[in-house]
Image (cartoon, rainbow, N blue to C red; front, side):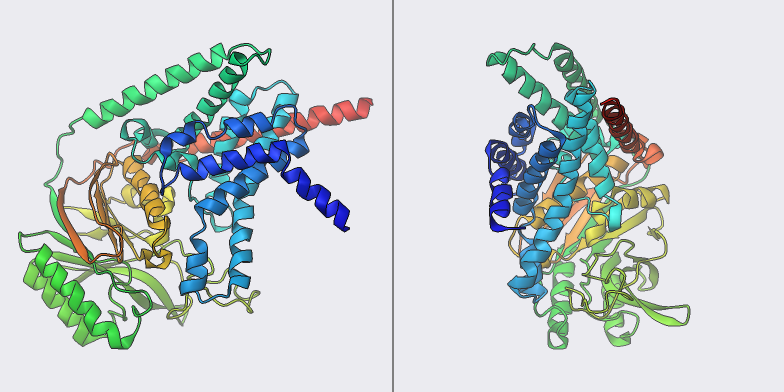
Length: 522
């Protein structure tokens, strides 16, 4: 490609359409925490829709790609903190890796706008196609090539409790669909108001109004629904040790780490608790292999007369080979180990190297004990009257895992995490926002213990009852009512999202066939 061609293509990205797409990307990014201006999500796509006017499919793809790059470049800026400060990668490697992920996520925006434009060319209105396609491609990116279910439009509304209660019907995708449809109706209304020679979107507006009324009616009903308690409440204490990441695995710092968690746990348990939770990797050694340190932890559980759940690396033999796991152990009030839950969905290049036998030249970003292996199944931890579903760090962003635990009998979800990797960035807030949807989808309370924050107690309606700040040594206590283990989402899962995938594929196929027929006639 010569210089003039490259400049020409660059200028195409920053023409009027490109500028509008960038504006939409910025508005989308601003709707997520932080700053968390969630109301912007409801108008963020209007510039993008304006850019799609009279566009060719190629232009529609480019506009969607530009919007996606802008949005995710701003939302995921913190990846460079992970890569450089803690992964010790040079900026020359960090920036390309970050941009590669941003480009990958932006492709799904581009495919949404491309299919929408293709649908319009065969007479299918954007008011139908774009919401459906947006949900379809959001869903696909949640599992394709390991998946990355981060920062979907619906997640931006995590504090608008009456709106997001429908997540127990259709997951976060139902809220995303409403947001996209609202943007389209407002865009078409603005065009009509400002004399673009188009009719007011009466039918679409009526449909949207009915959907919003039904959503809010359902939401307020769920929030006001006082379910009969099926079991006695649990008194919980969540411990935030605030252990610096750069010394977390240092043998010299081990004693101080355990001292910190012991002291905070004793303070938190003074009023009497049933369960004390420490974060991911709070125990910076193999609990299985350190009898003296393990006995110290067992004695603490006996002293508090409470179950103690904590993160620790684990190992086991698989096919004659030693396998490392990122795990959570639970010790009973009597000091016995009564269960272990292993992380099921690992972080690519953080906890393992995908295709490691082929990509032998790539080291893990996170230097740790060794390559981890995923757990073999979702194991609930039994406290007696209540079972816990433990999700470790990153895997809380995947709704199907929380669903597995609750279907397996868990009535409290426990998220243990070490968000120190993110530094003082937006990522811990984004991580918390996503996890709230797991409580609503499964109608199961979520308790979250984080090394450096944010530690929180979330009820089954997604209400944050208490939370800590970032990078503070703290604990939070509270009483939670175990969930009912009953919701439509638990029964049908992501069936509505799959339906959107099939509709999107049908639209793309119909558009392709019609274009082929037109071409053959010419």
